[in-house]
Length: 146
Image 1: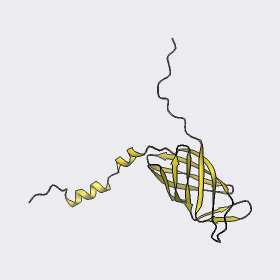
Image 2: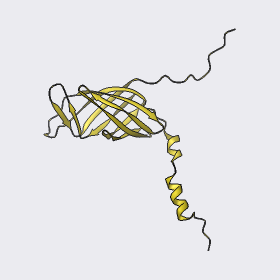
Image 3: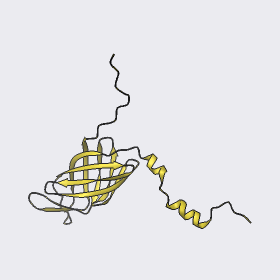
């Protein structure tokens, strides 16, 4: 009896192909410079002071790369946008909700050096606002002068 299902080798090839549907569904662009603060509970239970942070992000499709910096250190980050959530998987771990030019959420197990002492918060609560973004392409060509 013949089956309409693809052969097992064909199924593997279908699963391995790039998911173009998820690329089309990325409507949120986080490219730009984001500034804000983070604070959280230290391992001893004390509330940490707010620490100023900056995220400089570049997005291509759902993939996001960039740099996180605080007053005394910086490091590379990578993640993906899925709907209105930015999930970091390299450099830091955590998720941020995106709403236009604002993001908030948490990072897990972050160790930051401040001016006075090293601080480790677990989790760190983050709130950011976009301060710069790329210049959008013009929607219509410039008017011709006679």
